[in-house]
Each structure stands twice: as C-alpha cells, then as structure tokens.
Picture (cartoon, rainbow, N blue to C red):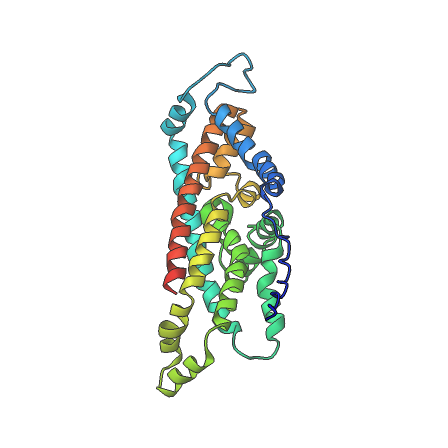
Length: 303
C-alpha cells in the first residue's frame, strides 16, 4: 500500500504590518505647543513674582506674592471683575435671545431669504476695531451720529452714549458682533429638527408659541450651551472695543480684566503687577472653561 504524501501546506505570509512607534511624529506638534503656550505662560508666572517696573529699573529682585497682594488690595481689580461679569453676562443673554429669534425667523421660507441671512451674518466678519469705530463715529456720536440725528428729528436731546451709558454702549457693540455667531450655530441646529415632529404637533393643534417653547427650544438646548461656552471664552478677553471707544472710562466704568492688565503693563509700565493680573485672568478663564465644558459634555451625553 502506497502512502500518499501530505499536500504541501501553503506558505504563511511574512509579517509585514509591524508595529511602528508613532510618537516621534508628535514631537513637532508638542514643540510648537510648548513654544507657543507653555513658554509665555511660564514667563508670565516668572514676571509675576519679581519686581519689574520699566520706569524704575533699579527696583529689582524677588517679590514673592507681593504683586498678588497689591493686586488683591487694589479696588480696581474687583471693579474690573464685576465689569467683566456684567459685560459677558449681558452679551450672552442678548446673543442667545436674538440668535434664537433670528434662527427661527430665517428658517422660514420667504423671498430674499438668502440675502437676508447674509446681511445677518455680515457683522461677524467685521474686525472688532472697525466695528467699534463705526459705532463710535457713525452711530453713537452725540453730534453727527445716526442715533443723534434721529433723536433731533423727534425733538429729543442727543445722548452722549459713551459718557452717559458707557457700559451699555460697549455691550451693544460687542453683542452686534456676536449675534451672527449665535445665529449660525442655532440655525444649523434648528434645520436638523425633524419636520415630522413639527407636523405632528401642528396636527394636534399646537400654535406657534407652543411649538417654539415645547419643541424648538428644547431641541436647541445643546446648541445654546455650545454657543455659551465658546462665546464666554472669547468675551472674557474683550479689549479692542473698549480701547477704541471708552479706554476703560469714564473712570473705571468700562474697565474689564483685560483692560486693567493692559493699563497697568503698557501704560504704567509695571510688568510684575500686570503679570500677576495675567495669571489671575488665566486661572479665571480655565475655571470658567472647565465648568462650561463639563456642562456641555453632560448635555451632549443626555442627548
């Protein structure tokens, strides 16, 4: 009896997909991040604990927490923190309310809708310095501004907005810039609302207000939280509008934390004191961002 030899087994392919260490590919990004963020932050922290005044070069040495002590004893710090809170909170309320209303309005079909949307979005692409100049010289000027002309036409005394209502004026300018951003986010969110859900509510007899408060607004809750998070981070550093219009005044009426740091560092030339304010601003921004990110993440998980 002949024994059949076993068929030769197919040759196993050589292992070609070797594990490759990709960590060196991350080094350029890490180096750029280090140079761009960590080094300036470390230098700010260093300057905040030394005596460094450009008007008095002889005053040097390690100051410890002396700059922070002067900062917390300065009533201007607390005024600037309060003004920052008022500015950020007011702009958030205005942008969310008007952004939601515009999103609902411009989601409807009407002639010229695309042009109308473009006009609403346009202020967001105007540089902050330019928009502040436009509002200061063309809209709110007490002599030849548009609002002053309208007041004169109806027999009213023109208002010097940046003297009588400085914080309100800055809030209007900043909100005018950020309403388009909220509008874009909320319009995108409202377009994802299921049309069958709206049609079912309409068949059940729900009116426009009921549909808005019980269908549209709950659907926009996550988008609104994203708008609040992103805007808050940027609004904490509002500077150009204040620089162009009020320069933090009258007095300290519009002095926010960003303007306080600028005025101390570049107008009074006290680098150590200004650096201490910068560290406070960094800590405040990170604390706010931490809670906002957690809130948004929780809303997204629930959705």
